[in-house]
Length: 293
Image 1 (spheres, rainbow, N blue to C red):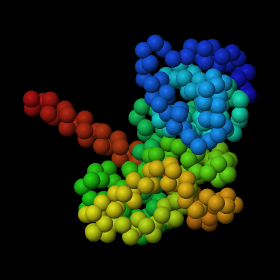
Image 2 (cartoon, helix red, strand yellow):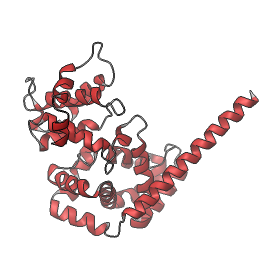
Image 3 (cartoon, rainbow, N blue to C red):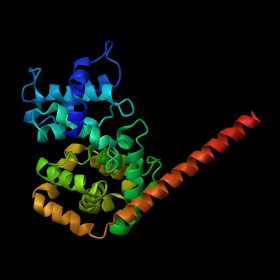
Image 4 (tube, rainbow, N blue to C red):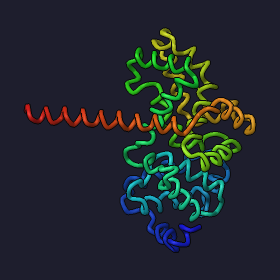
């Protein structure tokens, strides 16, 4: 409300700009993403021919955000988050716009680092989740590490196949009854809840992944197929763990009861230290090549 009051009329002006001539990026990507955003949701896609339909209003919000936020603009996945906000706040385009802005720029969420051009928060999430896996699901952690060493088809590791997709969606891809509860806790806890849910999903999928991580399955491609399933929203949405939201939330907190922000922060610092070191080594290598050329 404070943002709307202090920036009175801004959303209206931004929404009137619309799409520039020539259909440049990222508007072209938005146009592709809107029809496939929660395609089964009747609220979003029930009035396909109407200019005032929820899908068209979602497009308007995303266009306006591109004009507003030159740092973030648009990244695939923002459509899911904006759509979930729109479903939760029907017919409130301006409120959805400013909630999206707060998610991106409030220090507790800082999603500009997730949806910005470098996708830094997605890689951070992947790194931290891999570290947490050692504590919470050690058997699975060992199996994934072993598979990464043996499988040349995974140059960035098993976790890279699905983890970025999960965090970019902020778990809006799960059934709405659970997504609402997850988001309520996310608004209170911040990033910790995203890790809690990821560990809970991996615990549920652990049996299948362990069975597919042997040498025979690696050679036959079964392991890669199992990983690929995890990045599909339709597969995650269909898991049995979401049937009862109370049981789901209890299970999430039971598994991750000892998870502390201090541990997550420590792993985040290690990620940025490793990233900085890697960048420094890369720059040093480039300088040496320049001197020798």
